[in-house]
Length: 113
Length: 235
Image (cartoon, each protein chain N blue to C red):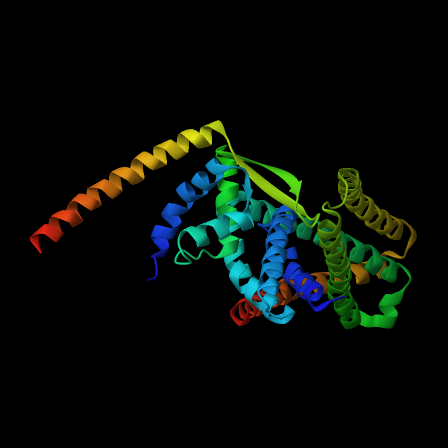
């Protein structure tokens, strides 16, 4: 099953904020987490994650800092800010509303069929 | 240098001239690329395969630039304005430098050697040759600056940029002052009949340069534009 580009783009922000809500992370790990959670069905183009992260940073929802990887290489980490937590709560409400609305429609259709 | 390092260097070179990706962005992407290569090699892919897959997963360079441009909309515009301004300044410097040389040639009596046609050609060729030399020097400096920017994580110091800017500000009045000084000296010290001949020759060459030089530069611009389009299509 391939997921539409619009849906992938729309879900990028809540996914990233949700992953960062679990703890500080970095780009490669975020991509891998999304891939694992979706069973490989949500395969982002890796490089496209970073403009989204930088946009979230510009919106002051996340902040970055430089740390070291296990191999000693420089690595940029991201952490969720207070404003990011509020934005995540708002995103959750919106997606829950959409999910519940669709669920009702599809359950009704299932009963009729 | 291993194959992986060569590939990463080549990939980095492709992004080095980007107007929308800064050195920090490229370092972050490179870190991701390296982690993906290590992960794929741990899955028993060969170095070449790991590099190919990792690069493909990271995404096309042109698409990356487009996406980054969305979050830095003014970055590319500022960069283009900067280079346009530098180009105009370099043209003014080249023009004044060529003018000083050609006036010196006249002063040394080269009109008799070159003739009117030769002088016309010299006054067209000199600015273009000077511009080409200055452009080649600018390109060398730009490539050196870009390589240094990536390797050291920073470009030329602010002090160096200020010195260069002051140099540009001073050089144009100095050259045009020199040119003016030459002409005044010629008027005062040489035979007026000969000077009238020089002025007449200069009028033809100036007319030709006003028409031919912009035409040549326009052709060059179109060629470079089409060449750039072809490179994007091929990649």
